[in-house]
Image 1: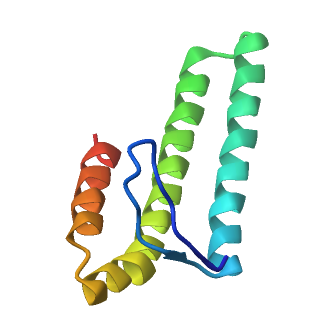
Image 2: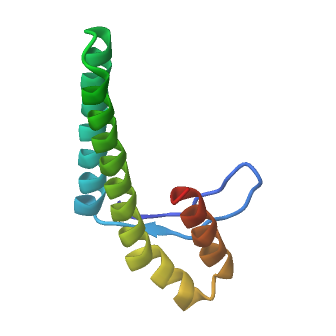
Length: 105
């Protein structure tokens, strides 16, 4: 994936992202499966499938999204946070705490 410097709309510069293609592909694959699963649930609704079955499938999607988030978090800690600590980048650590708070709600 290489090293990239990101900026948001407030011109805040974020830390470099250094992730392997394998890590990136693993997250993309998980998200692709989630998208497919959601499409299947949509068809279930269109076909008047029993609501309890739809709820079970929605719970599975929630779990899959959480698993994808956990993978992103682990990769972020292993690479970006280690880099931020080495560089004394306190903003990245604050950003991580904010992101975790939002993710677990």
